[in-house]
Length: 348
Length: 270
Image (cartoon, rainbow over all chains, first blue to last red; front, top):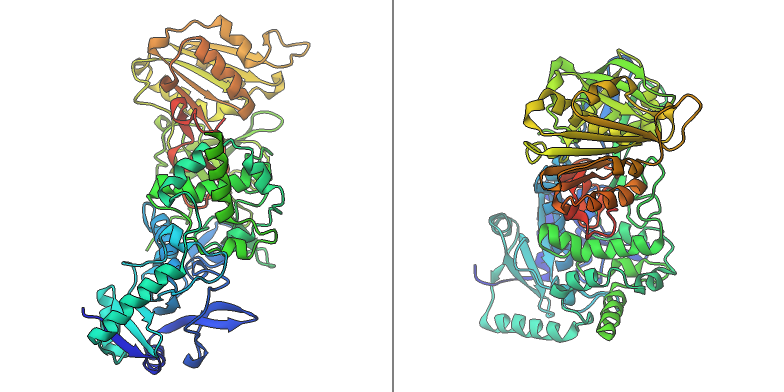
């Protein structure tokens, strides 16, 4: 499809029309943060924002998700709970958000498909907004290769910075939505040049900040496994798990039962969990397989930078910087990768 | 759309006190469905309203639709299980994971070392061998418990001796104990194996592995003919929740039984 353009008013008109047929989740300013939230009035939607507090995973894997209800007086009866998921358009998510879904999709819809996840995922439409400048000093998406999207989106928007947005579709569904809900026109040659210029400027606006290339990270992390560096970098870690909560690709969960006050009914649910929490690798017999902060921090980095690469073929980190942004002691992957890299270089 | 986290119901047929701590539960899936497990696999057991936890199967699939679990009450779910009686129901998901090397062991001699509760999953394999005795060569079983009163499946020891050598030891004896005293590795000098045709399998507490593995190496058994069963808290059983990860491996998928050669370079394994 040829490049299309739409005006900023056209985008708001698009949102209004979408709302007739879809639940629309866009980015709103809330309590001093930007957040993905269901849209009431399209004018609430922020088109240009640095980054959301919570990642998209909150919509695919809710922080607290009931999935079984049961009766336990006499022979138990167990019922599966599937939430009704309306068709939903995510509007204005960033490229790193889209990249984070790849890992969730692979983990939850690869082998042993998780029907809770799949039920949501197949009803979701993604309209991505390109990033033209870094959110802040914590982002390192360019290093992780997640600044660019070439697949996985339904519609991709790029701000041409003159009241117009370049529009591309990445799926048949995107094409249908574009035709049905928007008034776009073909881009002029001049507008096509503008997009190219904006992409050149984007290349300059984003700098590479991680010394090792992303392809080198698995080996670097594995070589540095026994480095005393992990003790140093984790010495201020509070083991609070904030990084796990805000990470778009942290999907580990805990499973627990709750009983109603009548003691006859109950439910099973899963909640977000985090490998930084002290109990994460504890077994019932009492043994804790990652007792120290260094063990846990190293595990988190290795999981993102090596284990998931070995298992699924892609890094588990999208470079969004949320972990550092919300870390009370500012443990920063850029510094960790570079620190470990320097340490290993100097050791030869 | 079926949910992989939905348990099937199983009824408790029998509860037997094995020791002061452990109970043996005999269960059957509703409708007489066969669990279809391999020795060494585990199930996620639900006491609905309390929770779910992974427990290994200690009976052999060769023994009919009933299956057994030997349970020590160490957590919420296992304590709740201990309060259940015949006729009560539990939820079962699975079987999950990779069990003992049934095929690779065929025609080979077996050296089996169980420490404490480690005898439970191994009993599944031992019964399987009893029921397919001609498929396997010489069988040597080493079993160590801390004290005489902690020995599990006491009444089956003579059956185990019926398929080969079964050597028993306790860390601390008492006035009436006439058998061997010492940790499990002290049984090893009494064992001779042909390392080229022996498969060694060990299940026990983490601390035991470091020592028993050294004994296997001394006997000349190659690293790819040694198997260990690693314990972690597999909360989902299907490679998602992240709790059972050992470096890059998920115990619930690639384990719980691993070839030693697969995990020897994993710092978190042993």
